[in-house]
Image (cartoon, rainbow, N blue to C red; front, side):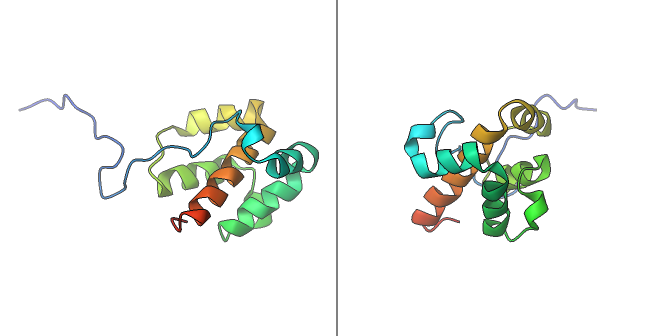
Length: 109
């Protein structure tokens, strides 16, 4: 019997591996999104959910970030998603919205 020595990598099964279009703390990339995420995080959450055709209540959830990462082959884990949202909620929301906007501009959303 042969032991498994390599785990499947991201991108296995037809999902292309990519990365976030901007970093978590790249707020200056889009000041409008940054201000919205800082001052009105619930509104930004609803915008994100709407972009992803989900219920507004799902905008700032671990499931939403994980689903987005999975859809675009972005490496990470559910645990990492949870910790990021727990400690850096506005920054994570802004990163997700910036990524959506950049992918829309590239016709990749």
